[in-house]
Image 1 (cartoon, rainbow, N blue to C red):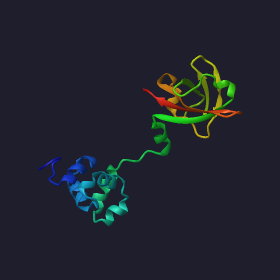
Image 2 (spheres, rainbow, N blue to C red):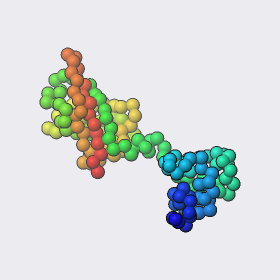
Image 3 (cartoon, rainbow, N blue to C red):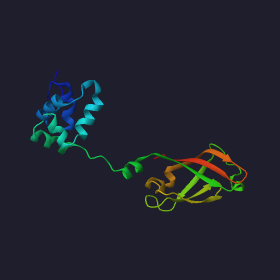
Image 4 (cartoon, one colour):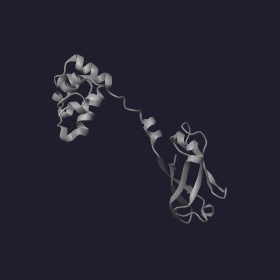
Length: 173
């Protein structure tokens, strides 16, 4: 059977990752320390192995050059955090401000400078301000589009002195 112009199944998987370089895909498939049964490991090996490791398994410098040139850069941590579709937070409130707050109640989160600051306000749907808080890390940029975000209470814990609420902010579009 031939796929992507090669007869080796693992090379057929590697060929698109290597921009159609069939000979390099064949060499990489032969050198791969994993089997086709663990395909995710094979792809991870191809996409993330440093040049030294590729040379150690017997690939020549030209093949290594092609493989490294086709490896996708991993996004940095801040970019990954910005991709999250939800954020879970907890805040403390004065007991008198939580009347009517319970699990499932929607809130409105208004961030100050998303992506730069962790400061935000919380409001009820009636427009009552519950308070202003500041997180140590910045809120994701997508929280600025309040029309595309839902904020929902997930838990309410009360003591005699204060009340803590947990809530989730989710991107909906």
